[in-house]
Amino acid sequence: MILVDYSGSMFASIHVELNRSKGNPYSKDFLRHILISQLRSYNKKFKEQFGQMVICLEGGYCWRKDFFPNYKALRAQARIDSGIDWKKIFEDMNDITAELIEYLPYKFIKVQGLEADDEIAILAMKSQEIQEEDIMGNVDPVMIISNDKDYKQLHKYKFINQYLPQKGTVYREKDPSFALLDLIVHGDKADGIPNINSNINTFVDGERQKAVASNLMRELTNKGIGILTEEQMKRYAENETLISFDKIPEEYYKKVIDEYNKPKSYSKMKLFNYLAKNKLREQIDRIEDF
Image (tube, rainbow, N blue to C red; front, side, top):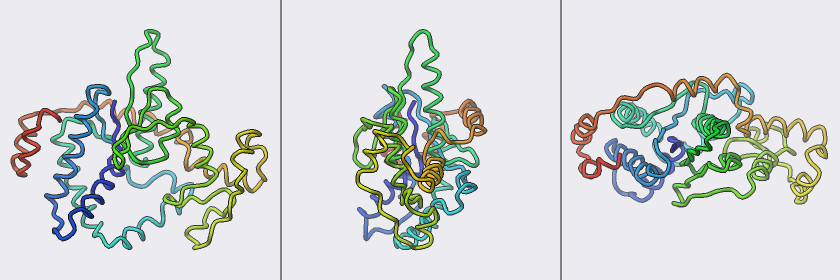
């Protein structure tokens, strides 16, 4: 199974292409070409070894905001500061995504309350659980397509791999447990999550984080989290809830699996007509890659 972090992977590609094409006006056709070309290339690259491709979409309001209202609160300002008209891009991307759901052969997963990485984590973890129970020893490897470091924790499963689009390389974390521990302890500024020595609202309050001792990770590895102070333990638990995929509420598992099990209809002729209508000649020439 190929699991694509749609927003994460696509926005990274869009950003690169926009920077590369400076001086050329942005257009919806330009965006459509990027999205379709990327998905086709991922499928061609990995379908023989990993099978069906599944596109995971953002499900809107995320459950983490109920736990931590300032989760990813600074991203909107970062988009404004970028100078790119992301509002227009989001609108166009929503329209094009609806087209892709209708015409492309891939399954699209969208569950209200989940981020794409939650959906990917659930599908990936459940696939590995099924394999462990398979007395025949059958193995269906998983390829996650995303640049996101959060997926390192899933590399504890032998048959889960990750492709980093920005680097164009397949990556496997050597010590997934340590990577998760490190992320929980140091936080994730991109998501607005401070380290365990800092108040959880540090970033939105415009404050600086308190430094984490250079030897703390070694101490935690050797002695466990029991060495943390009461306040550090409180912050550790908060960060773990926001970062560890094992903390995804159980209620969402069935919703993701049910969404995945929905039948997908596909017509190559409909896809051909769609590509022709949008003058995507290059994609028509490579229609067998979809």
